[in-house]
Length: 163
Image (cartoon, rainbow, N blue to C red; front, top):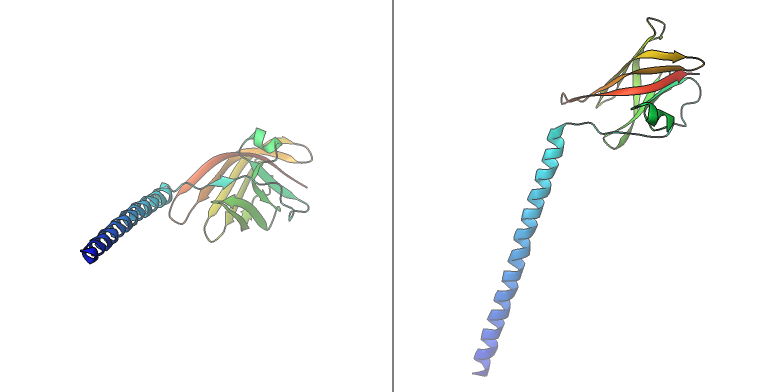
């Protein structure tokens, strides 16, 4: 009788442990499915995250730099900067991007600014019109970002170019 009670108790303990292990495994599977679904939703939304950054130390002399609006510009919250000829800088989708300037207007034609920038992942164009000119030229316009998947994001910009 003593052995029978020990045997039944061992079976009951084993059965309870198996049941407890089964529940967390199914809960983990559900959690991982939820995370995967969330990730899929973020990717399919296609928006480009454009973050602000302080003025780049790499830029020494002539440059252009833009913010989303005049208030951000005055607060030095830039979304775009370039060294007026070779290299442009942005922070896109959480990563600092150093990109090549493909073309840049001389700003003398109709006082309009246009720039074409490209990296492996993004094509960017900046178009603007001069709103004020002193030592540095103030511009207002749009910045357009195109991703390889066809996503296009356009936003207003305000900034200046000068030496």
